[in-house]
Length: 138
Image (cartoon, rainbow, N blue to C red):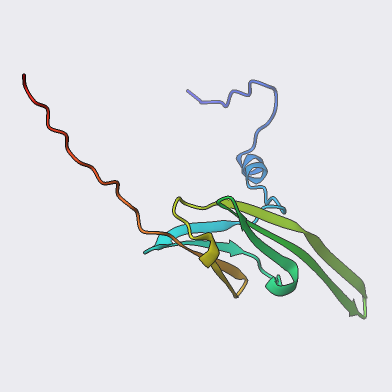
């Protein structure tokens, strides 16, 4: 007995096409990695080819870290057989919600090898003072 694929809509869905459709690289979204290291919340953002002093803006407001960047690249190749020019440009952004207790006035950032790293100190968790109430039996 042979097993055949049922195509309900009359379309030939090839797995490689579906995989390519779902693996879309949205040019306007910055990929990030978020993690806790001790009393710090660390956000690492991919920003290759960006000069953070000229092309990036990092702001924080109401518990949201906003990272925006502008990329503009142009390459030219001249040779015996012709001329080739390529360009790539665009705006990218990402908003990251900061955890409770984030000290927004102490945030620091660094950039190395195409990775922007933002460190957010977090206040130690304050546990509420809980007192047990005794119930009298009358």
